[in-house]
Structures are given as structure tokens and as C-alpha cells.
Image (cartoon, rainbow, N blue to C red; front, side, top):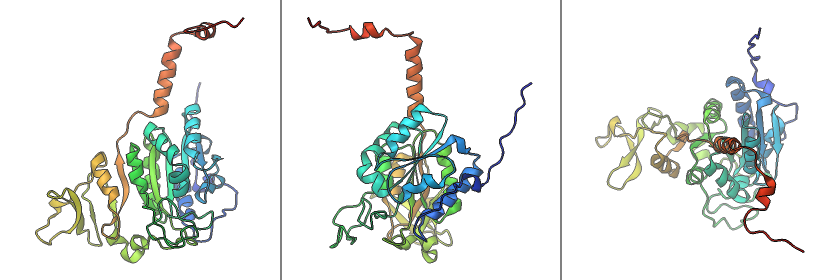
Length: 340
């Protein structure tokens, strides 16, 4: 007689490795790591079924600190390695950990393809708007005018927006979170894992050494309520200490604008309701940023589609159903010639 045995319930410590964590004191990566340990335990993940794949950068040390399988790969190529892994072992939970430089500079091409193909991997992009590991050079997300060792007179590059890039790559799940908001991060990680297909989460992460407080305009406790909007599917896009501020669509300009309920005749009925399946709305939401708008957080877009490895598997099974092939016949098919 077969007896079903429930797997042992794991704790966050069961997902933490025995390696000393080697990030700078105060780095936002610590908070993200702790949130991941807790989230995996709460969602019932199994270490032997979980893999973290990283590229190069501060964030890419992540696999060393997880008591799971892990690959520390090469610069920008983590999505390619993760794709091969998921195709070979589709039953695994595969997480890609990358940074704004690793993913959007040398790795931009690989990130684009893993998103457009919709491979069932979870991509965490740590965005601190700087190259931290190589001592503070400007990155693809650095702001105009940012001074760094590689831009001593100030950056003149127009910055890339991570979530806009993901949507433009036809990502089916796009979200944004902040390093120190553990509860919200846990919920985002769970949603990403449950999503079948490529999931993309931009993690706003503070680099205390080379770009400290660059996000303070919306992360500081004193301004957080008025500068953060946590989007929830089916709920009005409201924010502020009294939840009396909101996002409205100006029907004349077809642009989003901030309004205050009770002023100029504005009612709650004028506030946009978040629809995470609406791609057009998602594009508008990721395009608005502080200081003129609140930072949009949470699941911004989620519209599942069949994942890449599922289609590959179905295609392979269909090919096998035709019976064994004849390699000699294949090699001699078409235009051939003999060499005397």
C-alpha cells in the first residue's frame, strides 16, 4: 500500500546557505535576500527543486547565499543559461538574479529574448542606477547629469526604464518593488512563481556606497505615503496618507494626471481602477515616475500565455509520434554529390 507523506514544512533558515554574506553593510541586497528566504518557505518551495541563476555584479552573488541549486554565470548571459536549464528540467523553479547593468547593458539582448519567448523563469532585476561592483560607474538606468568615475562631467545618456523595456519585450508579467518592503516583496515573489511564463520584477535597491539615497524622493518614511502607489488589481489607483489622491485619465490629452478627491469636483469615481491585464494601461503606469507622480509598485501587468518550454515539449512529442527518423536518408536527401 502506498502511503502519501506530506513534505516537511521548511523555515526561512532552510533556504539560507552557510556562506558569509559579503555585501557592503547597509546594502539593500540584504533585505531582498531575507525576503526571498521567507517567501520561499511560506510558498512551500523545495530547495531541491529551486535554482538561482545570476550573471555578474553585486546582486549576482545571490546564489551563494541560497541553500538551493545555483549557477553564477557570465556577464549578461544568465537568461540564456536559465532558458537552457528550464528546457532541460522544466519541473524546476528557476530564478534569474541580475542588476541594471548586467541585464540592460551587456545582457540586454538576452533579457529581451527570454521575455519575448515567455520562458517560465522568474527574473529579479536589482536596480540601483549604478555599477556597484566595479566602483560606481554610471549604468543604463543612471539619470541625466549623474557624476561618476566614468561620467565626471555628468551623464548625457538618456536612461533606460526597466519596466518599459520589459513591456516592450512582450513580457507577460511585470512588477516593481522596493528592497526594504519585505511583506510586499514576499507577495510579489509568490505571484511571480505562480505565473506560468516569464515574470519580471524590478527591485528598487539602494547602493549605500556609490549611489546612496538616489530613491529617497519616494522611499523616505516621511514621504512614502504621498509618493508611493501600490497598485492592486480591481482597486482604484489611490495613494496618500488619507488615500485621497489618485491617478485619473485626462480624456482630452489622453494622459495620466494626479488629482485630489474633493478638489475641483473630483470624486472617487474619477479615479482609474487598476486592471493588470490591460497592456496599454500598464505602459502608461510604468512611464510615470517621481517627482511629478508617485512611484507605481506592485503587479503592474499580468496576462498569462503558454510558456516557451511547454510549446517546445509539445513540438518534440509531436515529432516523436511520427516514429524514428532515418539519419542516412536525411543525409542523402536533397542535392547531394559524390567525390571520386
